Length: 212
Image (tube, rainbow, N blue to C red):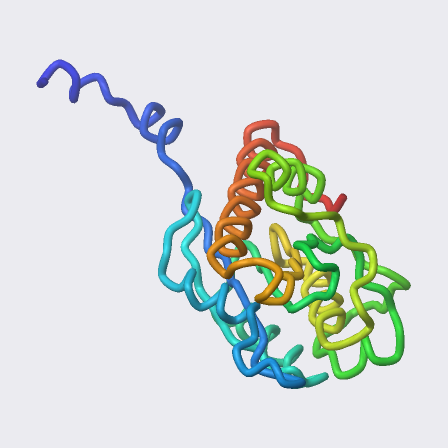
């Protein structure tokens, strides 16, 4: 044993240590008759967990323009997460990792610290890999291209525009009668594992973190 410990170098420790990232996971409060919004039911059950080297922080966002964007902006400033994953209730009938948030009057209103207003902003999540992972685990999911022009897209535009983040993504979950919350949780965990894999791959190759 002494021989083993004497031969553990700083280089070996650095090579084998797994960097811990912080990920902020947000869900939404109740709205339009959905007292128990499934996006929050998923997010709150991830609180305090460590997933694929991620330390999870959670927050419940109000379904309100402006207030929700201000809240997530303040949380990013305070917590300084590496990754933000926002979850919302969608109506695809399955999971959807959203690709793009589009500029419209409702989408970009009252977003604090928004430096430029682009026609569209893209996720930096590895969306193709996430959907392939869901397929492997037999969970119905797609790349979403209809973010909704509502508060979900308002938050998408907010977090996709944050240059200080390593990764930002948005997943729409289906209604509770279409998929169990446990399945949704497992799918979100799988998505975060794919995000972690891409972060590690880019760190090893020295590539810059660019949106897809």
